[in-house]
View 1: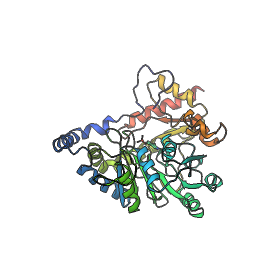
View 2: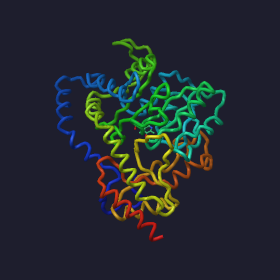
View 3: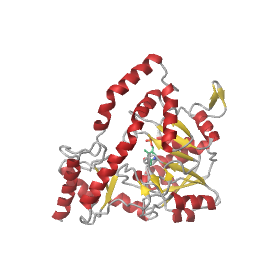
View 4: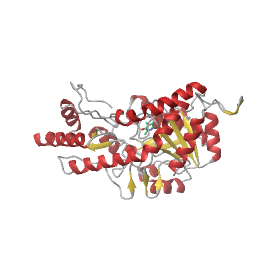
Amino acid sequence: MSQGDEPAARVDIPFIDLAPVNQGLKEQVLAQVAQIIDTGAFTNGPAVKAFEEAFASYCGSRFCVGTASGLDALRLSLLATGIEEGDEVILPAMTFVATLEAVEQAGGRPVPVDVSELDYGLDADAAAASITSRTRFLMPVHLYGQMADMRALTAVAERHSLVLVEDACQAHGARRDGYRAGTVGVAGAFSFYPTKNLGAFGDAGALITGDEAIAARARALREHGQTAKNRHQASGYTARLDTIQAAVLLTKLPLLDRWNEKRGRLAAMYDQALAGVGDLVLPPRPPGSEPVWHVYVVRTGRARGLERFLAERGIASGRHYPCPPPLTPAFARLGYRQGDFPVAESLARESLSLPFFPGMTDHQVERVAETVHEFFRRG
Ligand SMILES: *Cc1c(COP(=O)(O)O)cnc(C)c1O
């Protein structure tokens, strides 16, 4: 959510505004928090189980295990699926850093490969070409709310007996080719960070799986490896979903589809208003895909100039992400260099995320679009 190097004097249109969606839920949530305070069930309260059942059913999966964050959901997905020290996990070079963090924290080795121009997801051919005798997992990311090409990726996984785990942290409710985000792999991880399509009032996450044993292992791992009170079967974590966050999520879940539809309408408005402007490349729309538009990302050779121009006119924007994670100092030890991921690197250079949130007004979209036009008119 960076807003450029020189902060704007004022922000008329924020990159994201959570208030329009959250304000209306305030009284309802406060009443539930009061009840949780009264009962003292701050962890493992009834709202946790209720949300897990509701979210599993929303996703079309059998089991859901609530976690403290999306990173925990990813890490527990890998651990519960049986990752072993040194296992290679193929994942996209353009994602949020958490995808790589989860693999390292679970003892695996992240093997980033380039993304596809067609959906900005893990490129199936590049993934297949990176398989070695140590490769055990494929971990696609449904970037920006657009599902990766799971038809091609499941074929690669099947051909090479790899385990598929999905990073669905930006794709609550997305579909493609009859697949639903998070249900294609043996496990799918979601984040409920406040700005995600389904956002808690703090940090939260969940994994979904159709495999009862994986669900049971994840449930134990999130709570110090306990399978029952004081029975510690594995060395685990404190990675539970708080009862208060579960209550928030339970209140918001029934509204998710409506918000996703609103995102779809905003994206269509942007698409129409920005078609053919300058050298702008609009988000790819692969046939058969129903993205949920976590963010609206355009590309241009003049991204930094556009970012500044918007900021000077009170319009904030974001970058997802300014540096491919394998090229950040955090992952320097993996030994990758500039030029290793041409598509991911050009996305990092050329992309700009325009203001985008379910409570955004048509007038705000029009103002952003007009200002983008003005930038390119000036040349
Ligand atoms: C948000 C996000 C995560 C991590 O979620 P946290 O809840 O912040 O831990 C992981 N992967 C992707 C692609 C994300 O966007």
